[in-house]
Image (cartoon, rainbow, N blue to C red; front, side, top):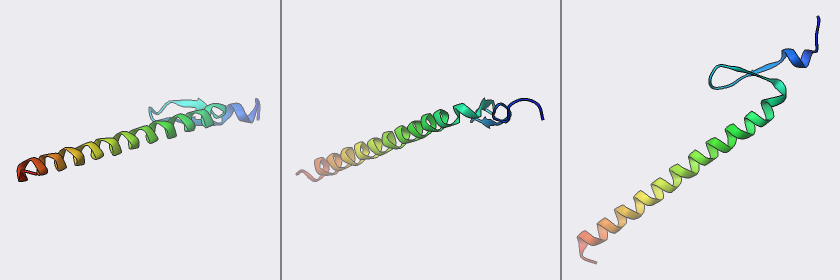
Length: 63
C-alpha cells in the first residue's frame, strides 16, 4: 500500500464531491450550523405566523 492512509480517506459531501478526511470535522461543523440556522428560521417563521393569526383573530372579534 503506497502513500499515507489518511490521504486515501475521503468524505462525500452533499454535492457528491469528495473532500479530504482532515476537512470532515470542519464540514460537519458547517453543516450543523447551517441546519441549526434553518431550524431557527423556521421557528421564527411559525412564531410570526402565530402572532399574525392571533392579531387577525382579535381584530375580527372586535377586542
